[in-house]
Length: 591
Image (tube, rainbow, N blue to C red; front, side, top):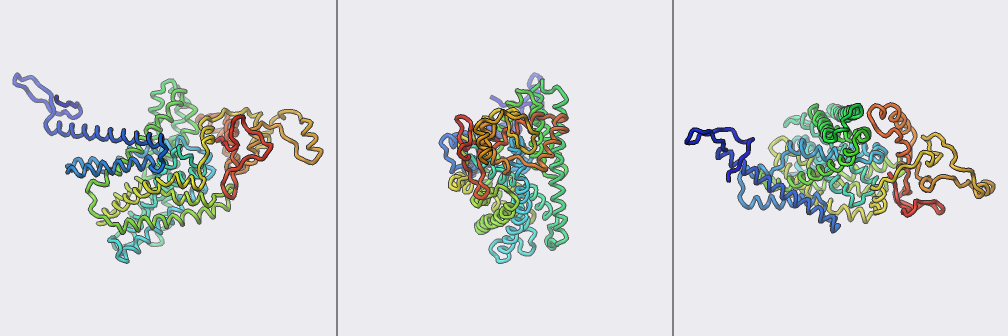
């Protein structure tokens, strides 16, 4: 039976009776069947990858992360396809396409990450994240770049040994810690990753992408076979980075606020289908606009998602509130699987002619070596300004979690010069190593270094216990006006007071147990946080949406039952005599 497809039909032919009959030409029919078969193959492989993810979760086989499984499936499929002598069209179908990645697969992953972000954990550690992302990436770029350049001068690898710009281009692209790889491994809820650790690693991976891309763009701009980077160009590169970063964030916030204002002041919530469609289009528009302005689409889309979650999620209908996160998460899951699958399949396409095991070994070693200098020294300095320190074992996990992914590989396909192939193959090899080896060892490392949370903590986070009324919250929180007493002092209170001991408060059990942690970075801050809370509640939320009684809900969920030890980062139980919720573990935490 003939295959028909209206979109591919362009011609009409006359039959014997002169009656027009519509049919596909042989070439068009062959193309249609080729596309159909390859699409079917891709759907089957994606389904197998998702089933493998289910089996990994079911059997708790965390030595094989879902992203690594998809990558290995892609390697197997690409290898088998290579053995059957495929045509050029089939090899092109299996090849990794940077534009497909940047404009179709990456946006839903980044938007879902921003929309479901633990905003308080992220912004409380924003200074440390910026230090990792900016200073760390700069340090890593120059260390990797000059190690590569030194290896070329020594004759170990066959790349440009006269101009360090080519090596610095490689250093900038390979320093991109990929948010897709980080999300797919450390963002897995089954790993129960420490929230502070996840905030630092994920925040760095999102923001350092902008640094790496800007550095790559600047080095590419000044790339010349007979010219080197001068010291006068370094300040220009820093200014360009600042401009790109601030511009990207501004674009994302403006579009997010515009979307929130529209939803707040219309009745579009009466039509959930239109509601979700517009929400997705606004988010995608922030990415496309930033890219069209030569800014970072990833940063723009990420902060657009954060803005929409903060304001617009309360403007959605009940139906959309329930379905939005599930839909975005499902799309992001398929996109993540597709990215790693395509990278694996692209390994055997045969379009790479330059391979160097020496360069691969040097690149992996220099990446691990450079990450030492953009993790431990920055953490050491950051600990002087933090109340909750970043312990040494957490720093080790941050160093170990420098996963490279599709962003680095996509940038490598823009490398100039005659050595492009060797850079592409080396980058792809580094991506496979960090995803399969480092990603597979992530869970054992987290478990060995005690960087995992208990299952009770995760269960309470998912339940999101209901907010307490303001009158039941602690009376000494700095940003809250004092409330009326909850009760008169008891006889025990008076006896304790006369004996010089502090009286027992009438605070609820939860607040009493959480009191010592209120001054930590997980507690409630003064200063900028206090000013922003007031400005946001008074001016922003009435215009753009949001929970107007947010203070009661946030204050309740800000109370932390885990006692963060400032030196070790471990969690301790409340002191004896402290109360806790019935049936709850003393290590539970509400965010």
